[in-house]
Image (cartoon, one colour):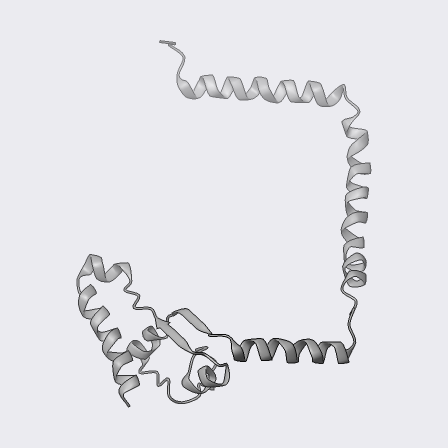
Length: 156
């Protein structure tokens, strides 16, 4: 085993590495290239908005947009629309959120009026129980409370 302490060896290795880098840097063309590379990078960076603004130009007319939207809505109405994960049970349990009324507060994205307007055919409600309930106890009670909140809301 080397008698020199580990930190002293690492410090010496670091000093040798820095000295080697300085030697390479001093004898190379790199210092002269740095401003040129920085200039090219800056030009490229500042030209990006112009490139993207040209590529984002509208390619369809309003008539074509309307036809496309009409076709999409027809397809949507004919499809079976299923939301496979909805966390609305947490606000229902914690805040007494009522799904039957339109939410105008902006706190949630789910309510029955919007589900009907959007043509939602089926919904899967998540019963998420935070890890703290598993650690502190009460996970089953939390899950049952969330299920009761959902059942109570649909029974009305």
